[in-house]
Length: 269
Length: 247
Image 1 (cartoon, rainbow over the protein chains, first blue to last red):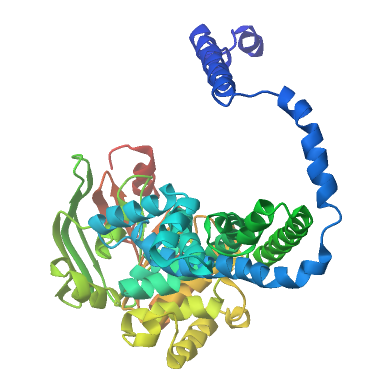
Image 2: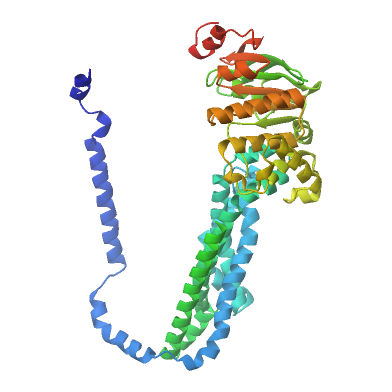
């Protein structure tokens, strides 16, 4: 009997069909073609690095050492940058939370609300934060406020999607158990859904703050305040030592935010 | 106390999961439902608590027909029926005490309980329920840290906090070791006898059914095959539920 089993040919499932191999080859070929066309469209010219090396060396020479004497003028824009991220993240979380509940298929109270919430979240996410900043600068003028608004609106899109995915992936057992006790819909939500998903949502919120801090630096380039605005001004005035100081402060801020948010995430998860 | 009459469930696909089931369970009685996978045991329990809407028939608790209720009235009526299942379905990040006190939510209509708080008197009652299942020492522990048997006892305490008249248990010992399974069955037996609850328990272990049940109900292909006192339910009749032979 054992001999007969050994003599039996290997199951068909273990051998790859020629059709499947051809499909794999076609996929690899298609990806290669796509990458090749991107090289043409992007006009990749590595030789430009060689011809531009003198210019880059000149900028580096003029940017060192960083102008630490101007540190006093950098503190306020740095605080603005952090606060744009903080305001945008908190406002984004506050608005994304109810939307994500409506946009989670397992807890949404009504189908039309589900589609409406999904639509709002997708729209907020589809428009880049830089474009939101341009729109808000046009609407409310220059300064950190349009930056904060842009970060908040874009965060609604990003957080709304992630929050709703966390809610959809949660264990529905406790929800069913509490429903069977005769608890109302809101009671089930606050006693079963919120405690189950809160740590994950907090972790995502902290990670978003980290991302928003980077975004708020760039938003300054379109007049939305913070370090980005200072950086653009310094570059336009060829004050490269101030530029290097601003980049140094940016580096410290980003690294600090990354470390703090990672530590807090470890604490809550 | 609980009276199920001509209860049927036909799914939109045409599959009949339950065929005209009749069942009466009195206070203080422990009825064990046996049957193979897909025979309709869980459908019967889920229809009784109206997690699934039956196609026809009636479910009466103390002469009140649950099949006619919806919305708030159904929620109120559900407080008389507590259900535990194979998985304890606890909120793992909350304390054992908070999980148990959640059983009382059905009778807490105040604003605070709607926003995540639990009334002190219900927390006190939850402590008594925990004592009843010998879990009071774990009250402050996170529910996620409990063992399988402890989690199931916590789920039973939550059901008790509901102050139900009927307790439904859907394979409560399926994922437990034999010792923990005996522990849970002894507890269910005691709740029926001492707390005068009507208990219906779905099981896959005929030996436990013989030891703890007042009556054994056999179900196959959605239809109740027999409903007999435990001492009269012959081993042959029970085994046909699993082998597929005619009774």
